[in-house]
Image (cartoon, rainbow, N blue to C red; front, side, top):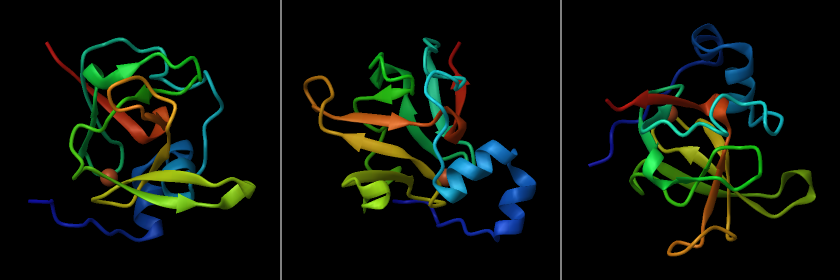
Length: 133
Ligand code: FE
């Protein structure tokens, strides 16, 4: 069963998040490639939403796409994320959001590795790694 939706005012998100986290998750921003905390992180663990703590991705699904952003072949659970068509910037892309709190996470592309063929291209600033062990 999906967790209950989390809704907070813009003000509350601003107080809770760093300016960069706020810009990316609540304003659909994008961090510069190769600058984020996790793009070359190989630690084992669960990546949760920086806004609400919902489990989104696992290091087991992470791969090095060379893009400069953390890349995953699949979410931990289809319940964790939702996708939406994003036609901003003149591109037909598919936006990935946290299902629980609507945080902008990144985009999903169809050039990932088998078996999913998907590449979830996610901003480090949207994530927090809960390391295992
Ligand atoms: Fe969230």
